[in-house]
Image 1 (cartoon, rainbow over the protein chains, first blue to last red):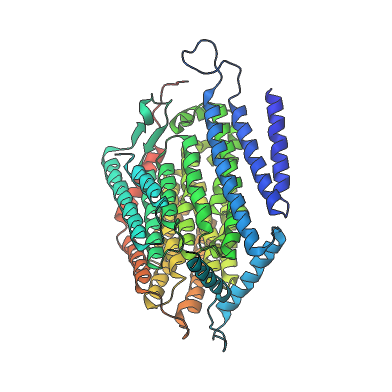
Image 2: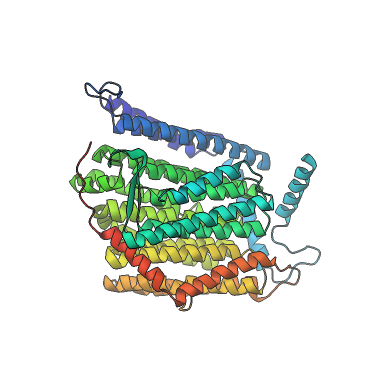
Length: 151
Length: 462
């Protein structure tokens, strides 16, 4: 039994780790969920023993209830995190219209170049307002206007 | 009384979760709740200072079976520090207008997670509180909700979730080999455990906490996240959340797995040295101020690692002192670098002096304590390196100062007065700690003696 469980943990973890190295955000999230489930199975395996259900009054050997309580807590937490990550992935998709990691890191690099230029520029260029995050602030303003119209 | 800070924060957070945080009165309510929690933590701290650590088993179970809260000076010190940084960031954001209705509630939830984690005496409960703090940090990282912040939040979640999973695996493994979940119980069982599984667990735990701290080989997530998030969130992440890493390494390393920490010392020294050099060199080569600060944070972790590797009374003393002062520095710097004005400029200069370790500011204490620890250990090379690192940090901090505050740009407005006053108050606090260090030093040595004293043997219970 313990061999089967450790095999399952190993396969889940390997599959999760493989998916986490992918460029696609959705695969990456599925990979995270798999790794989380590998961890949950591992907790079960940590207290694995044969026995009756641990309900009072205790008669024979009972199985360890603590690992099950821990696993349940860990499942709940990883469920919450998965929901959060999925909603965030959706927001990233709306903002970039892409779920490809390469395009996201490209956007990150462009942002870094912009930041460096803003930090280096000794004098504000004529015609621009010189603030470092022009594009973003515009976007924020647009969002605020949108919110105001909605409410 | 022991659950008072936790209870205030928990009920406050739940209450604020249903209120609209963008309204000024709700944000002020959150500030009041956080202040109350901070005050009750300090009150609890005064009691523990005079009467020693307190322990409580929840639900009236027997000791060793129920989930326990165990509060000592170390926990109080870190809880007070984290709540203080959270409070400063919350007031700062309120003064700048809160942009998301959930923001104040999230700050309080993070307060719940952090105080719970510093107060708990149960390893699995540590994980649960850790996840509460991390979950609110995940949402906070996306605060502002521009594409840049969404990217930063995504990266932050992916990397830190993997770290949390590793930590969970380590807790499960600890339970498997010791059969206990309460920290005191694990600590008493640990010497009986064979060396190889214990070393494996210690390594996994070290990696998990290093990811939170952003130590050198695990630092890759840190710079985009700290630069991408809003200034108040960056201050929270680096000033409050990163304390988990230091506290966890002290609690699980120095307290529960001292033998394994001792074996790992050479690795810690190498990683610490690489971190210091890497952080300093990257900081000097970067242009944008928040990026410089982010890389500087990687460098600062290196000092903590070196002090942890030296260990013993002087080493742990240096770890705690340095971590406390570093958290305050980072909170101040990340908040002030986003603003303009002479008051902010002066506060930034105080923070910069503190990072560089120049005497009137508190950072000097942290640097000198690590210096002492290195000399005590006859590690002259490391003492020299600390000196070099301080000189480099002086250089990069004043590069920012020159670019940011020295030559005011005409087109830029001076920030509102209220946020300026907050960072100025933090700067005055740093100076005050530097000029009158006795209370902090006493607290730190009290925390160290609590960490080092032999745990009373508890009867073995199933």
